Image: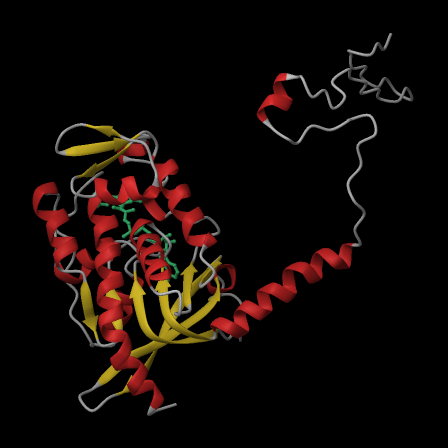
Length: 320
Ligand SMILES: Cc1cc2nc3c(=O)[nH]c(=O)nc-3n(C[C@H](O)[C@H](O)[C@H](O)COP(=O)(O)OP(=O)(O)OC[C@H]3O[C@@H](n4cnc5c(N)ncnc54)[C@H](O)[C@@H]3O)c2cc1C
């Protein structure tokens, strides 16, 4: 028998009865936690036509593609270093258009877990200053801090980045080549060649899937160390003989973190490299599960990128 407080499961042709007494009960525990209390018996969404949903998405996406085809700065990779760079740039230069290209559907790179798939994230000081600025809680252990879950750090950082009006994240989109331009002394990076990641993964078995492009004055590459997708921009320039590759060194936390931060720089004209991708360029040590260097490298990358921005803007104005 169905009463006001029970749920009756349908048996063959008997309809489901989902009656409840919790009808927009403003005194319930749920109502004390959220404004979103409804009368479930009369509940109904506002009507919509399917095409409205399609247009709501596509009109905005294609407008963004148009707007960011000419970006000021492109960040490749939305891991911890890339998102930190995006946050600092977007916040400090609201006049700039910043596009983030992330190959995965989900952002965060190797930052959803700590070492060996554990939860906590360890950051050595002075990275605590940035963590405090994000408004994250942490345990202070003296020389280092611990955020209770790496996912908490990356999701908080990502939400702050996505709120910035001058930053656009194109996820499920990968950089599959770089745009270059001749200069008086050689060549410089002047943009990125993009494609849907799923398309990019099928160049071997489908033909003629040409990419798209984004011109930019500065590219910041944060694609992580070597792996299925990692160190992309460094490896691409190495394949052209434009820079030399030095494989990541063995683990040494004390040397590694300082090296990544202090060497964050424009490694090739137009290309700033940050985070673990740098270790494939400089042979710096791996650091295991400490993340302070990713954050501080992202901040330094933002500074380095702004330093070269004006020069690149001038060069771009003189070419096509
Ligand atoms: C198995 C494993 C072992 C690791 N060991 C260590 C270690 O010993 N020491 C250490 O310091 N770190 C290690 N890491 C990495 C660790 O997660 C990093 O320290 C940290 O996440 C690096 O941050 P990042 O921002 O440099 O790059 P990541 O967090 O790796 O983020 C890179 C992002 O770039 C994206 N990307 C890559 N290529 C492209 C492309 N072509 N176009 C668009 N997007 C792209 C990726 O999808 C990813 O989201 C390891 C990671 C893994 C998976």
